[in-house]
Length: 196
Image 1: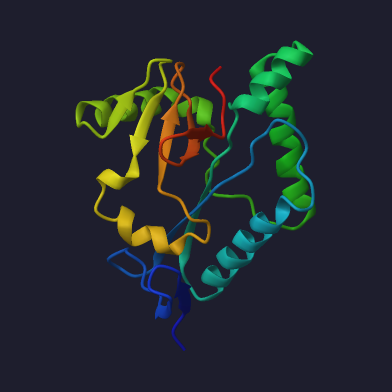
Image 2: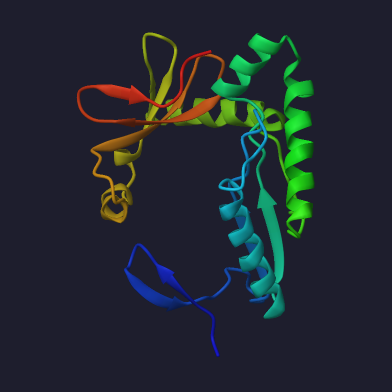
């Protein structure tokens, strides 16, 4: 029996076909934790689902490469290190270790890779610079860089998928180059993150 998933873009069930030419390797990318504090059981719902999906794919004979990022720099983390006086690495490694131990306690398989955001800041900065050069991003007076999804052909197709109406969503990079997601309505901007 073929494996089928519900596609929220087409609103229909579709047979799953890996993009791997051999049809056996599946790349599974999952957003991981923001390690500014201990995770609670509600946070683990998504991670338990990802583990269940991975196990199901592996049981069907797929080789799964499971990548889960660790967000180890963002506004809440910056506030925590300012309040505690700890270094970024001391604070985030403590909560990252606790998160991975909790995952193990819940019986979840460890992801194949767990890249940290801080390990890829130069990559993020280069990407932002490329977007600016291509005219897909612009720098605001406060140093923030805004990326407008409406410049991409798929933006109008994706909008109906969202349950919350929006006019546009932008990728914002504050003056230190750390990206945060901001939702906007025209003409006002309501960022979810704050400049550092």
